[in-house]
Image (cartoon, rainbow, N blue to C red; front, side):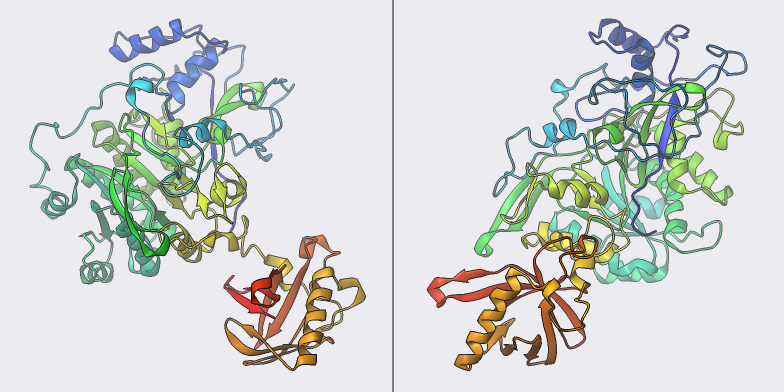
Length: 610
């Protein structure tokens, strides 16, 4: 998939608070007590729906009560019933206290319009709870919020497969090879980070493993789907579980491989280990389980950093979201067909989620494994979200066609500023001056970044590793928030008269550099490119370098669609295009002009001195 401005979303009709059957359970009692005591102005249907359908997030906890909706054939409100199968939606009016006054439309809203919200206060408040982003360790707080500070009914106790005080791992007669791996790799809390991979993506797997090691995540294991991947892991001393599986279609591409993970996860949960499942196009920057990591700071000084756990562990499923702000990630109101009110939220990503080793989580992945093995056209992420959001009706089981009761998992969505997707990272975080200052090398440090929205997966991973693990200032700045390099069209735009500056494309920067070139020619001196002398500019647009002749001039500024209206220069030689923006003058070095060139093909930067 290439760059996509779109994402999948889920919508569920409001539950009717006027007709509810509560079973005599502790979870039901907590829900009733919380809703009865809550001092808010929300509609009762909205409050009940949020408590039972929407996931917990940050300090906001949910009871974890399971539920079933009464059959629509027998029970309906106002003569209409709601449909849950709706596509992604974005609209100007969102009934949410974060969005202000809401005006209900007369008919259902367009399910495919673009969601335009950009509301970040909830998530930002969490990561900045220790103060503003600055230097050193002042790079944000992604630790799980203390249980004493959480809000909502107490979550139900998790029904663990292996009792905390009992033997571990369990079911080893059935899964001896996995037990041998888990016994060596799992941490003291019986947790592992697992990634499923085949030999098609070994380069990305290498980048993924590099980030694990830099973040000191020692309880990680690679599930090797073929012998070549297993040998790769063994050679590099990477813990692995060799488990050869074949997708329904026989394909070994990214999506086909992704669907196999549910069979593997069923095995992991069966032996009693909780799993943080990660795709390999994820860069890890903190230890999500907590622990120390070494980082090289200024002047090569190695410092030890301590990460607190970012995993809450109070739900069966804790998942990363494809949402990019509070509204899209945590849920909002939406009027569907026949103006049926629904709650809607952007899908959680099936490439990064945490499963507590509970009976409910295992039942969910068992259902998912069965679905991806039999439903040829079902995307694993769609099924993953359906099992948590849609398939709870009393008259609709797996795939909506009847079947066993849903798993009844309790849910939590991860903070999208800590477990980032690349739409949020490149489109929003980089331009939030409270979280990012590229020039000063200051940034919120997330736990992870999943390169799920962009096609240049390994290339962006390299930049993320360079910046967050190797301390290169603003290494991610060369990438566009959409597809390709940030310089994009501006870097490759050229004057209409090929290779020669024209009056329409002349600029203040061009005239300054041209005057310097004339002065240098009069003295018989040359400039340098990346430290190499012999770099000579002529006032007619010619260029001589140690690598051959070329051309230079002003990049067009009138066509903003091409060049963005910014004053820039181009330097083309050896079949390669380069771009320069601005200069600095160093008086202590004789008044030379210092410019930074960006190579259009890959964003590599070098210094030019005239």
